[in-house]
Amino acid sequence: MTKNVLIISSSPRKNGNSDLLCNEFMKGVVEAGHNVEKIRLSDYKINFCQACYVCKTKGKCFQNDDMEKILEKIDNADTIVLATPVYFYCMSAQLKTMIDRTVGKYPIKGKEFYYIITSTNSEKKNVEKVIDALRGFAIDCTKDSKECGVIYGIGASAKGDIEKTPAFKEAFEMGKRV
Image (tube, rainbow, N blue to C red):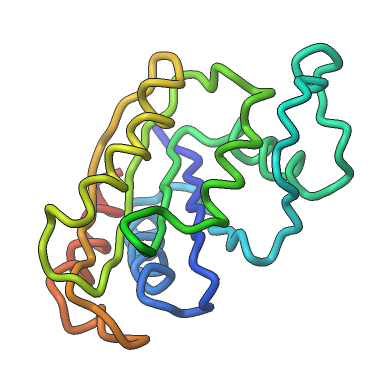
């Protein structure tokens, strides 16, 4: 069965380490014969959630930004990849803002989730807080969804360092297994 895969890259750096892992994952997905689209959140205008819940009563947020386009892509995806660099033990602000704005679509149903995390620190334990937060959204706040894989792009500081780590090849291989 051909799947629709949506890769959400939240790095503000084009071709930064997490963005490069997204590209490798995408190559694997293409090789496996699935449909894939990668979006870079920094290419979209996404306002902060105002917690007014207009989206719950009217079915759409009152804000006129690009979030509706992203929500449509999420709806049409079978598989979603959430990719983020780690900043001060947290996901990027871009990804957190997007996640907050999905409240009008709760529950998101029946998705497969993968996570791509990059960090300058070389210890997995230092990125687990971010993984837990992503699991909170992807698994706890959705219905009938499942986690399918995590890529730990750790120990990569400068732009491009990730290409010298095992995570680079792992991203391609994991993409092939979607």
